[in-house]
Structures are given as structure tokens and as C-alpha cells.
Length: 198
Image (cartoon, rainbow, N blue to C red; front, side, top):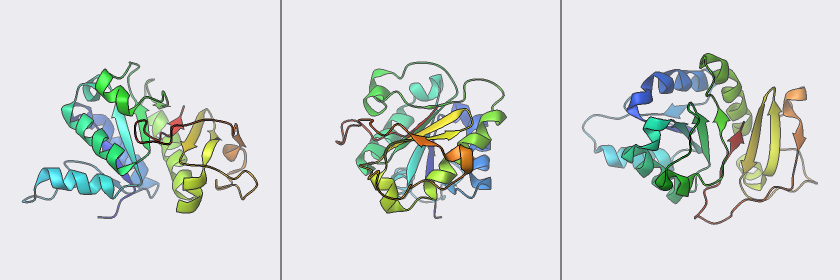
């Protein structure tokens, strides 16, 4: 299965993961998530590794449960190895524990803490859809570009961006207002490249 997004979550948050996955796939963003996409008869660990390495980004459903999940931590380690951007879809307002903070050291996230959950799914899907509509080359050049999606902002930190070149974001009128270019991000593996939507 070809996919763009690996959804990392605690199994205790499956009631959030399922509608989030459905919203993204309704926006033509194919996702990989366990246990739905796990093939029976094949080693689980290898499938997780291949799925993460085959993704464009990881979406982490961040909660108290995922904050204490050994499986989520292992998936973040694999994402770090693959140098994937990580988007935190926060359903609870809390600080990552020391282990997760190592990979989530940039305090950026999509705030989905206020109920109902449904109100956040559409804007989140639009933000990701716009990101993936840029070319791979443009994504790598993008730096410190923040896109307004109504009350949501998307920050990409995937390398450098030439401000004299073409705008890498698909024009969506007022929803694609670009600003704030001088943002610094870590370029090494110790601090994960992170996408902010807040």
C-alpha cells in the first residue's frame, strides 16, 4: 500500500486515530496505521519499520497515553532515523516526557484539545493536503514558511527556502497567506525537523 502519512498513536486513542485517518484519506492523503494495515503472517516490527521509512511524514496523536507508550517512542526513533517531519496532533495539553521530548524538542503542534474533535479534522486535512501538493524539491527548500488556514498555521522546516523563487504553497486565496521567513531550525538529527500547525 502506497501512503504519505504514518499515524503513530497509543491504542487507547484508537477512537481518535480512526476518524483522523478517515478525514485524511477523504482528502486523498493515504495513511498507514496499525492494526488496520498490518499484514497477518509477517513480523510486526519489520512492517512498522518499512511503513515509517515509506512515509512522507509522521502524524503523532499526542496524549497522556502516547506520552507513556513504549511503542510510540520506538516509532519516533524510527522516524528520527528516516528524518521524517513530525506533526503532533495534540488532543491533551501536557508536556512530553523526557524521552519523547528528545524527538519533539521544538514545541510545535496542531491544537486539537478543545472538543469536539470533528472541528479540527477538516483544517488539519487541508493543511496536510496543501503541504503534499508542493513538489518534493520545494518541500526540501521550504524554511520558516507559515501558512494561514483560518485559525491554523502551518510551519515547515524542511531545509532552506529561496524567497526569490516561486511560492511553494498552492494558492488558496486568503488561506495561503505566507509570512515570517526568518525562522531558525536545527539541521542535524539530534532535533527532529518539525511541522507546526497551531
